Length: 364
Image 1 (cartoon, rainbow, N blue to C red):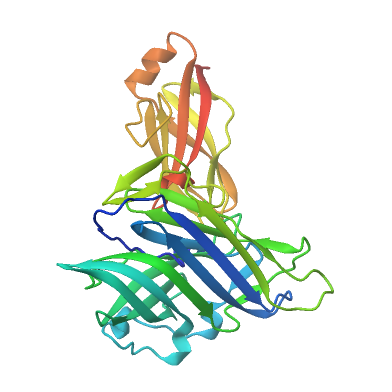
Image 2: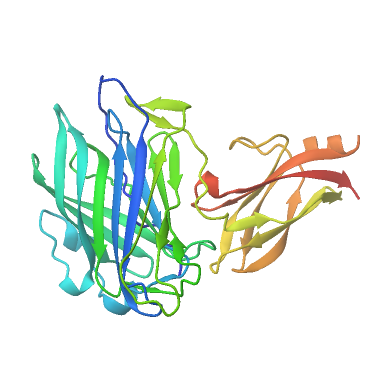
């Protein structure tokens, strides 16, 4: 399953004023029915964000358990974005993958309030794409289309749905506060559940880069047990340290959703003729493409003082990447061993997905 860098994640931003701010709390619940392996399953999701004022939630990402398989292409025809513009969608019923409802805080000019979105519809838009159509009823009547992606190559989870961000919604700025959703039967098949539970994941990305992540366990039927609904829930209260964005307060945390899809596997580095060889592993089934950087201190996204190289690695394989050293690195190596921070970054991925390793580099 390829990157549906998508999935249930929606970009919603809100500018609210005054009122004492409290840290955001997020929760995610998932129900799977039936829970027997190899059968088509219906999945229901419920996500909520609380806080006062509501935090500026930008993207919601939901990772299905590792043993789930996405079957959108087997049950649906393709829906085009042009057919979803407007208040009523015009896509074929056979392209519908699920329905739900949501509540959003919005600001449009001088109008600020809460809108009920009912229904929310998800449509199949291609191998790794889905489209959400949100139909707001009050106090504004609007149809909003949210292009989203499905990631199908995470080594630690099954399909990963990321909704959003929403752009040009006609609503002004939006903040998602609650979201419930149920898929059509057969959208997923489930694998075996020998341990008695599946592990899902949710990532809440707020305006300004703050994140919250939770990993609910979903109880499931064991081998030979009767099938039936399986439900799991988890809450993630915000840690103490917080940042303020657009009148809201959210915690600054580092994401842990899944492992990096690319990993620096070298344990030490040797420089020869002004070049350094770094061994990098691609942990997904899809090809890994990105940039390798050698920093003089723990990187925070700044300049790579020692060198940079692009990489392209076949899925589920490793490759040695050669980095040409800049003058700063070669000068320091003449004096002896150099400590460098190696960072591998995938194209289009959040920085939390980078592989970062502190290594000793010497001439040899």
